[in-house]
Length: 480
Image (cartoon, rainbow, N blue to C red; front, side, top):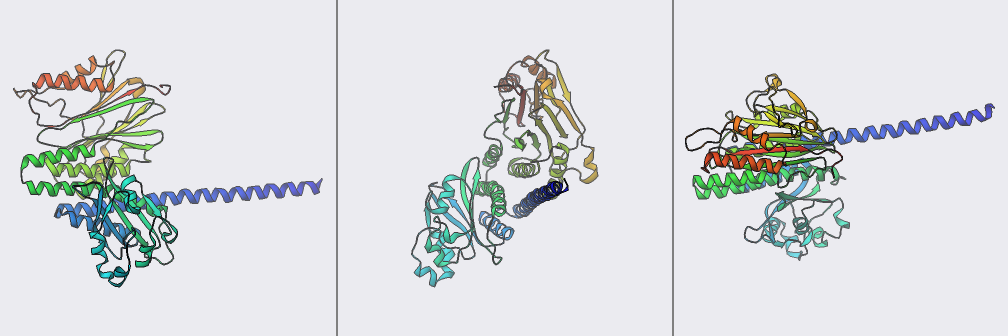
């Protein structure tokens, strides 16, 4: 009996050891992911801080290009870097605007002259015009997908001529994308650390930086165009373009809920904002905001809000905690007279609950489809950019059931404050009356009814403030 028991005990012991080893590996991997995410978030925020400070002092496109390349090279410890941008007159052509370090042509070319005159290498790369789809740079410009090449010497996408000019070990290429359009390509070459090459962590970091850089570069480019025109009307038009650039191109497509957002900019300001952020697979973040300030400054603040919120929201199920961190960033990186009202909520796609925090914004409204009852929710909250630290902690969270409410409405003050020729305001009462009459309609139809009624009230005269609405309608987990 004892002779049979010993092997069983040994097997159980071995199994226990194996389980402990696997558990330790899982814990290590989870901690590794958290560290990488924290590093990425910290680096993105550092980039936003530095770029924001530079833009505040002076807006110059070439300097911004150089700053982006320098920052990305330092963040990844790269030896060389460059930004290639599509031609303004022909978007099928892409050309280097900034080249730092020994950066070889990444397409087939003759090498003898370049090897003997490396000091002219950057000038040569800048002069060369590539077609979209040509070489590895053109491929990224065509597909909009980042590429990691850990070993350039064995990758067929890298021409041998490039390795003859400069010793190539690893490359990262990331697209600069705005509104689904590729503006250019960011390229980094070789780790400075001996024996090291780029990995997936570096690629993810560079991709995140490229996303923020693309919006910044586009804004700076538009700003330079504005400086040439020197007219207020053109500044306002560009501000509206900024606003449109930052708003979602598509509405969320969820089986359990219908969500629709709408924003109509006024002539004088471009400060309203709404967005949708994937918190995780089961939760969707919904945000609406109103930025103080007109024209380009307001649009730049909105860009900062968008970038910061998108960086902070994933993985955090507390709207108040997210807004608190966003507020700290706004306080650091904007002027003292910049304020933003925001409502940020998280929709639980499984339960239908909507948990939100309100930073000085308009109330959140629910409309019952059964009896058209309108309810207003106004948890305490202070605007972003006003106070910091413990003073911001008065901001509260509130949870409502989108499943029970039926319809949830978020809006900016441009709705009730719309004016007619007599300078009379549209008002909350009339707004809520339209919501009651529209209780059984779709979110898109409800917004259409509100805008139509505002148009009747105002007589179609131009408005002094933006009008923005986001409407959610719960359909249920069993909806097709």
